[in-house]
Length: 629
Image (cartoon, rainbow, N blue to C red):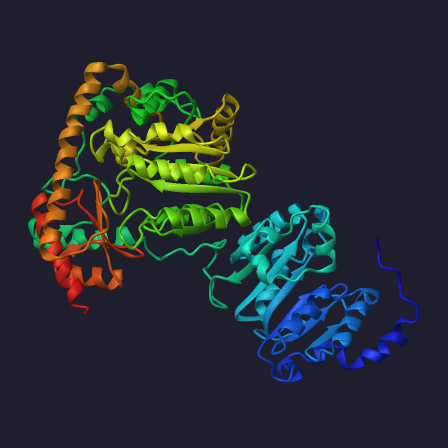
């Protein structure tokens, strides 16, 4: 119901002249003086009847508040509330905002509140919405360096629109929930009149807090940053480049390039399975030149299922979609099983590109502590973070990289998987979880049957948790540059499996279209020829044993010199926890050891250095760490 126009409004307004600002442009640049030099100055755009601003001002007496409302009849109730409470830290502007620059200087405001703005649903009115990108830029012009915008609405379409406008404005969503009253953010929430009315009718209240990513005035030429932080150079490839230069200058035997995530022989040459190489060379032109179906050729999908699952025969419904590398599987899962603004969850020891892939899709990123103080997998923090995120969003993508985690080499045991499944089965029925198991390194993690022993545990998941496997054929078959992978779901019913194939194929079509046909044909051929498959498996087994020996050599050497490493079982990498990984890696480069700094430590690629070097590098790392004490 619209507010009726109050009679004798000008007469009634006369009693509030001391807290009314009719010409805010005349106060521009002097709001600190007008506020009596309060701790902070905050603006509410569209204060309505004033419940929010009056309660906030009462709760925060050291701050000063400016409430704007163009409907003067509505604002009268707000004025009365503030007067009744005897507040002196609120003023009101009875006007509509056209351009905030007219009222405030740059950096003059500490925070802005947008509560239940008019959604203006017609497309022709988009630029008038208070979260339109042009208005967001105004807000952050007048906000100081650390200022934020807090936005609440019950309108789902406006909320989703606003997420995209935030990204387009190169801003960051720092707090986010699609159900404010069920979230931790409700603890300090003050309800507006509108909020109380519509939440009482069962409407979920959405909220986001928006902050800047870059310093005021920082730009990046002609590119649209869209909320991303893009480094000048990829860190891993930059370090690897310096390592290659050192090898050219000093010789391979005198340099340890432990940066590369590919299997190299003892002389630093890329290992390619000769049996796979032979199959590649036997391809006919039509097998690599013709487009593949979007979801992959039938022979590849069948072969990828066998390769990923091994001897495991599932009772579930399998959906398969080919992707260009495991990265494609990650991208498609995030795009289809989370919503813009949602946070993706994974362990804190993780491949850094997970966060970049999430950011590209307009998603946030959160981690749980992978290990507790005793060095055991941290089930408590995993469950805490799952529950925390599902209080603020309806669905969750959880990424677990196992076996042979990058960057630690850790693999969850069957018992640990049973605990993870039990945690996920406690997720409420009205919440959806996509459990993405990144098994990129599975065929170099140990015995092929033992490393797949966890798969039957996935069948115990309830129907609101969808297990998805990201299988990297590029790594298993040592043709990294072919970018060949598959994503497989183990669905509870046929409809869910069909939906998985449909939505992920759609995403593939709109991203890279077809995955390369050539490597799919190779893998299909390998799995159709028992003799060739046996040859591939045997050859891979030899290199896997070589990699496991390197890992044991590194572990033994670390133990002898007292170097603490993150719990390790197998795989391409070992990690060493430390306080300043970048500084440690720079110090190691002085000793011709090249490693990758991660958020919580240093990653060493044992896949790319010899067993002899694996026995020497721990002492050099220990020496580098000790030099900072």
